[in-house]
Length: 608
Image (tube, rainbow, N blue to C red; front, side, top):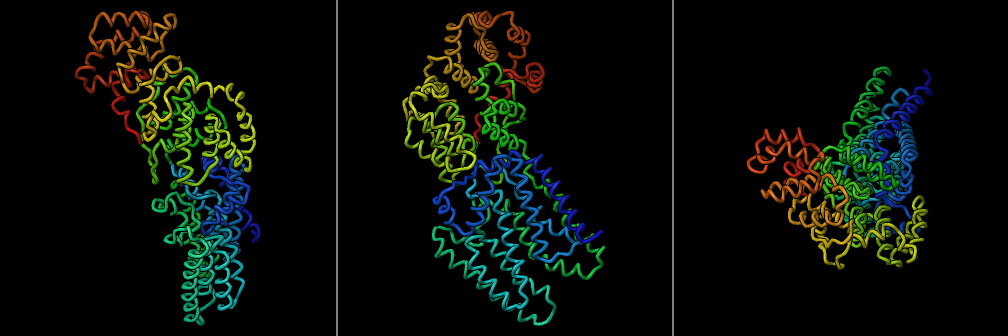
């Protein structure tokens, strides 16, 4: 096989396999990371990023990240850049054709980094999270390759120092990596002569690198925290909680630093043996990509749901939420919102699991932080939604997601000047400008008043502004609000009955149930209302009330007959339930309010 084929075939295999794997596993992740980023085509945005070292990589990374709005083209672009990086690694370190596998290890480690993201994607404080590492390393490899063309040690040291002075503001830690490796390279690859001189040059230049970083951070980036000078340019959530997420990047730096040593040692063995040995780190990296992936089913469902919402595909949202086992509270809230919007909340909400899971994350965030802005907006609590989005906007980096939320909230609050501010930002983006231009139609009072979401607001929210406590967890606040709501619309009745059922509030339930039955005596009550009414009436041990409720729900109906068949079981469950009784309930009455009341209601008030 020719040298050309030995190089080309591995690149083709890598491109095909990497694209297929990312397309299969990471489309939703790519989209959501993009939606939590922003790239605005104006000078103010550039000035914002230019406040930190490494802003060049962040700016270019953010520009490229926007193309993940369409996940498959975004993934294709990402894989293309990984191939460019691999080719530059091969060129910079003069890797021979039979050792080409060594060039792919940094690209595989970057795939590990991307797939290792967890719920922290919703709280990132860095721009261009998807692409900035690969952009930074491409810049680093270019510098190393060019500096390695210089043969004299002192010339290389001087040029490395000049390059570092120029490129540290743009590349941050990636420029430091390039400088250190290019100066250390001759210590390994240029024989044994003048070893002491080379080591002395390396020590002096390394000291000068540190001094340059300290000076440039102090004078060029006064708002940057100097404690993190050596980490400038790395994607981060919270500096103190990002160490584990950075692991693949740390390994990449260490790998590139020892790569000259590896190449030197492999040059001493036969080409066949060297080829086999060079495949070991590449195979290890391939194996580690799926192992290191954040393999949390709730996270996969959540990013898929967020993607579906942004694409306005609410049917997919409901399907995804209903299929998730032990969902986190965010998914339960989304599930109930979609059931409510379809008029199916009181018939289906307890057919699915309420046994919720906590957020398992290296960077833990509450469900309210992640989904609060959207959930509040769906229930037309514009002010609460705006506040939650603004908190994320300030604490983390601005994002398309938060700007869209705040623009919609401002429009619905009829704060048109504020809405214009956010819409103008989105009009300077690539993929969100059409959405912003369409929303401008709602800046007209006459058009807004005909909007169905705006109409829903007056049917749900009836309390004076500021009467609710927005410091609570989103779900808990909504439940408290709806169980204390004055009822004079059908929409409010549905939400209030649902909240009463979730909290097991019998007093609120009875008031709403009887009022709703009197108002709609010709309409069959929703399934879960029937189940709760029978249970609560039976619990009160009032034969007259119990008989009245049986007539109200329909004594010959399936729900009433099921309850009557299991009266003895419910009597034991209300007095001294045993594990056998609970197992029987699970077998006989799955997907009912009865099962929720006895098995899940006591675990409900756990808000993470």
